[in-house]
Length: 108
Image (tube, rainbow, N blue to C red; front, top):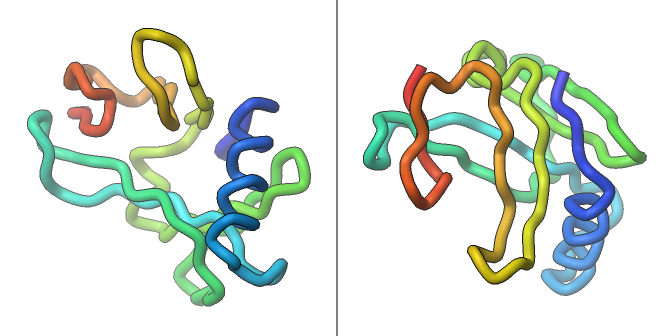
């Protein structure tokens, strides 16, 4: 399961509205190869649900995760920071053994 903090929920709702996505679009979280640590997060809105997706819901936000990415994301919390040390979404991933300075890539 993937959790979303209240701050991340607020920002996701704001972005979905700003980008003009219909209410039927959900949040897709995936893991792809790349980045300085070997794996990187991919986060976007998606209107398609595949039979290869696991669907979670937290705080009223539906989250789509393909089964391959789920192995890396179980137990992850999505947060949002707008502080002085950086602005943007942050993944708090208990499966990551190492993360890079930007927080966008990780290794297991």
